[in-house]
Structures are given as structure tokens and as C-alpha cells.
Image (spheres, protein in one colour):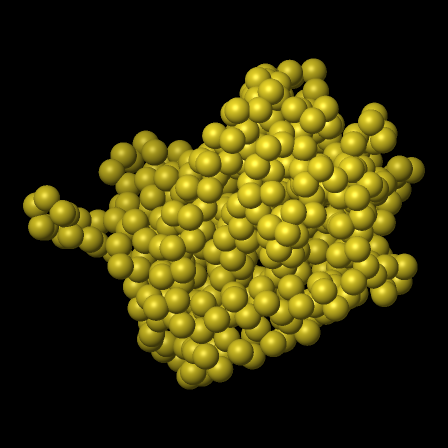
Length: 508
Ligand code: TRP
């Protein structure tokens, strides 16, 4: 039963567009919301350094593997995996990597649009001047009211899902490409403006010190797990999003100077993406922490850092209404260019099976929207209906982020390192430097799988193991987390609330 699927989606116009699209996928809530609060909770500079190491030694090699598999397969992740497996003369069952990824992408999409929808609400609130001169209680009340209102959250979720699937429905060239060409420059400009604004505040020096002073005494085993998990999440690894984008990456481009076709190198392209993603995360920290320090707030406020501390800080500063509005537009743009990469692999798969793109987008969007209602209700009506890891949202989030993403990453590394024909991989990567290639190969064969197994084992052990204090473990159920106060004077000192590779914790 051999089916052949033709690539029908189109190709990125250039290597640069691929970089924009993949960076758009990578830069999202993970960078602007999660990275700063993780850094805040795990002691600043030391955590930043760990994260950089994880990106370099695990994230980048696995990203290279994903792009390589996608470009080799040329199709949606499911079909690409089946095709590459076939070419390597192993069972097509390796397509399971694609199926697993499609499922985790679907789960992630369902709640990503809910949280991203909050940023739309905050754009509105910021513009209306609600935060201007507001007290901590008033700012907290805005967040609490939003979470308590299923209808408002549903409205924002619906809007964000429509924005996401609307882009996916228009296809690779007319949709995704156009979107990232507009969103990414807006994002970069806003980020620079906001960092500039933060630089004028009195807390800038403290903010920078907090981010970049490496205090090794603060390093803990838990921080390692958190940093490793986050490096997967932030680079969009483990579910085939980057694989799908890799499939639209041309093998050759015309050299603008000589006019001759030259191969597009995967290694250097991935390096650019990872560097930009990291710079954006650091810049987000540079925009946020100075404001936090200028207002005498605590950096370790947890998941509420962006939705409580930051609006509070903006509200105390001149021009705060404008800048808080700009800040949440930035968050919305970043989340938008990420969420489209969650929808694309599934839609591409259906299109290859003969579906019309708009119909496939409508179906996937509608199904994810329905599942997302569960997340919406987890913050209000179903708040107390907890099972396993906590609320419905906690479970969906835990399963997709903490279990399926690392598992996907592990299988991708194993396939690329052990299963796929070595000659094929080498040819596809076309690395000029053989030593670099051998290093990559050693890392994806041994180091990356070992690191992922460690992460996986640790989070499982600390969650389900006979630990007296499961909340100390990285993927602590959100339920057990304490409220994230806007002023961390209220926060407990030995705060270990944040789930390792999860973005949970927001409903506290
Ligand atoms: N990287 C995005 C962020 O930081 C989230 C994301 C988009 C993602 N696509 C993904 C995470 C695929 C894992 C896999 O917000």
C-alpha cells in the first residue's frame, strides 16, 4: 500500500523567509512571558546561562535534525517521516513521530490560543488606560476578572483561533509568508522601542544585573530541568512544526552576486534562528525587569509577572498606557506567528490527502477551538474540578508539553542519529566542515537522547514518584502552586512553583 504524496504547499521564497517563519514559530509566549518569569524564579543570570547552554548543546542539534528530516521528506511531518523511513529501508511506522507531533500540536494549539487571547484583551485594557496609576489590587483584579469570565475568554480565544487558522488557510505563500513578513518586523521594532523605554527607567541597571550577573550558588538540579525543557519549547521542537517548515525550504538558492545556484545550509540557518530566538528572550527580559525594579516589585512574581507586575509597573510610569498597549501588541504578534506553526502540520497533512486547504483549516481550527473551551472553563467554572495533574487545562498542558514534546524530540533524535541512512543525512545537511558534522552526529546519537531521557525521567519521578513533596518537582501541578502575587513581598521565599517544561501555573 504505497501512497505517494506530492508537495502541494509551495516553497518559501528565500532562505531569509524560512528564517523569518521559523523564528516566528520559535519566538512566542515562551520568550516574552515564560522566559522572564522562569528567570525571575530561578535566580536570574545563573538560569540564563544554563538556558544558553541547553540551547547550544541540545536545542540546536535537534533543530538541525528536524529541519533536515522535513526538507528530506518535503511533506507534512507525518508523510515526511514515512517517506524518509521508506528511503532508509525501515518500516513506515516511523510515521508515528509525525502522528504524535500532530496530536501534540493540536493539543498545544487548543490552549495556546486561549493564553494568547489574553494578550488581545490586555491590548484593549492597556489602551483604555485602566492600568494608569492603578494599585496592585486593581491590577490583580483586572487579571482575576478576565479569568473569572468564561465569555470574555471565549471571545478572545475565538478571535485568536480565527486569526491563526485564517493565516493557515491562505497557504504557505499567501498566508504564512505574508504574515511573518509583517509580524516579525513589527515585533522587532516594538521590542527595541520597549527596551529603549526600559533603559530610561531608574531600574535599568538593576534589571541588567539581575539578568546577566551569573551567581552560580543559585544553580540547582531543578533549574537544569527547567532550562532544558524550556529550550525545547522555545525553539518549537518535538512536534514537527519546524519539520513542516523545513519541508518548504528550498534546497538551492540563487546567489545574488554570482547568479549561480548554491545549496542552502541547514546548520547555519538553524544557528541564525536559535540566536534570534535567544536574543528576543533576553530583550524581553531587558524590557521587563527594569520596569519591575523601577517600581520596587519582585522579579520572582511567577506566571503573573506579565499579566500583573508588568501592567502595574507601566501604570506608574509616564506614557505607561501607550507603552503597555505596545507591549501587549508585541506579545500578540509573537504568539500569532507561533500559533500558525501549530496549525500548519495538521492542515498540510489533510491537504496532502486531498482536502481543500480552507476546509482543512476550518476543521482543525473548529476542533481545536472546541477543545480550547475546556481550557477556558478551567479558569472559572471547572476551576475546582481537578483530576490527575489539576484542572482540565493542567492536564492537557502537562501531557502535551511535559510528555509529548520531550518524547517527540527523543524519537526525532533517535531517528536522525540511528535509524536514518547516514549517507542521506550527510547529503541533506551538506555541511562543509566534516568535523562539525561528526560533532552534530555524536550529539544527536548520544547526548541529546540522554539529556531528554534525563529530563523526562526527572519530571516523571518528581510528579509521580514517591516524593513527599511533589510541588518541589519541576512539573508541579498548577493546583499546588501558590498565587503569583504582583508584589513578591507576598511571595514565599523558597518559591518552587514553576513547572519544568510546562507553561502551566497561569491560572493561579
Ligand atoms: N516556541 C513557541 C513559544 O515559545 C511555542 C511553539 C510554537 C511551540 N510552535 C511550537 C512549542 C511547536 C513546541 C512545539 O511560544
